[in-house]
Image 1: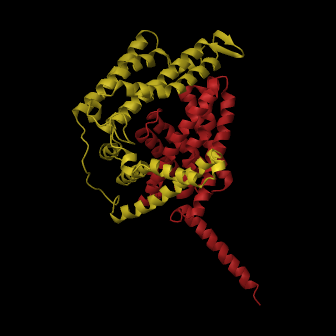
Image 2 (image 1 turned 30 degrees about the horizontal axis):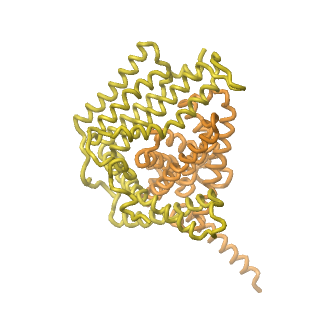
Image 3 (image 1 turned 180 degrees about the horizontal axis):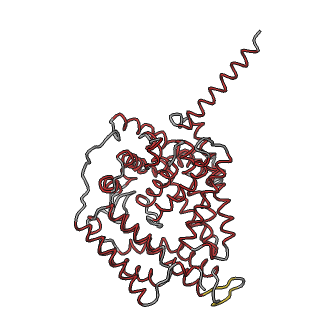
Length: 214
Length: 280
């Protein structure tokens, strides 16, 4: 948190938004856990790979939070609070280790935005965010479950990277754009940026129209 | 449709609501929530380094009866919770059994079951059930709102973050009802001939609607919290959470018991750590 406070402290307004995001994410993550258990049974003896197929879905709130608030640390905060909601209020079987997992996943997903100094929110940055999140999740799996020494490590890596890009990076951008269109983000950095760019486009259009006048 | 009071549920035995403990009193109910969370984090964190099948099994055989007694939990609830983690544990066991290098025990088609795979798989599977048991005991004996108060008091969680998470908790309590309402509204609009189609799409739409509605609510909440100057400075705490000697004793007993099991396992020559991932 100290790093957050140094330059851009989070306001109560932003913290409540992050809590709301994290709560919904925690609730949906919990639903995803039920889907994961079903997929696991459906995949039979290869059920353990199901978590790599779905892994990206459990990290989507981090890039979404960074997209909305645009301050350092918010992705990590959102993931940790989502993990807290899962552990404390929804009784996740993974236990409090999920807080550590959330920290690492959030940091992984946020890395892409840190590299662009929280200034760029194009599709490429979201793809990169999915990749860095997947890499962080792989690192944690290697410590917790020893994935690196299993025979199917390459398959796991491939599934995980695809899942990270699609279910974490791209999904966050799609959800972020859809939220912008609803107007619910107008009070936040993402909404302000959009309003500013819309206003700039409008004034440009007016200027162009003005030039065309006789 | 269920009304909010019913949906969030009073803490009746066997069916605690979101973030609410079981209604009775017990040794575990009375412990400081931050201490409980910390002990749980330390124990489950330390377990990551234990990779032989015997140590987690011994800890599980100790922890099951211990939490049932200390939390005065019905043993059926504990067993049902353990049953919920079994598919995952079994799948972890199977995948590890057939994907790790080592001396081959038996061959089934293209798959080779190895000794090292069985050992590591069993260890990870027991760990899954053990961690599940401990977290179930934690959730069934801990009040979410008291935990946040305690984290603010004893873990120096900032007032703004505490209020934000507590506000989030209020939103969470309403989520199941909201979800039901949205799904019912969707179902009412589907033409009779097309029921049951596009389930994933419908669920995704409902999830997005849930997100938008909750974000709007968070905006209103943030404004009313700012009007009351919540988070603008230090404040007193309603119903402070106690932290005392009994919590220190609890920590010492739990960590001591775990250390004793690990030491006994090391003495018997069973204990293995990350070396088990890559046998010589």
